[in-house]
Image 1: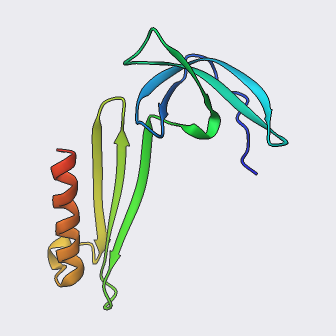
Image 2: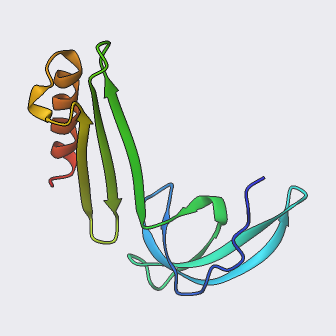
Amino acid sequence: MKKINRNTEKRQRVRVLETGELGTVTDQQLILRQGRLHVYRQVRLDKKPHLDRWFWDDQLGGTRERCRVTIENEDGQTLIFNLEMDYEKENLRMDVSGKPGNLKEHNGLHALMANDFVDGISQHHPM
């Protein structure tokens, strides 16, 4: 069961997961849904400030999102990409590390795939 965060304060910045829109929580209610207690939040969207919409807690996310991508070859060479997207600042940050630590020593298919991965990201999110 998902833990309910009852301590969410008003004025917290959130992102609507379905559309990617940003907004501010203006109110919240605890409501029984399918036999379980869920949080229902009123959000004032940035692009439509005259409209307040209500969302279930599982429809909202934070304004920052992180992920890790690991590419490994059969010889044990590993490239690790740590990505962080800040939706407020519209900024994508990427840190690359690997084994061996000198990234210039990597070659082969995993290095080629890593290059394509970085090219694909940079086309959608210039860094």
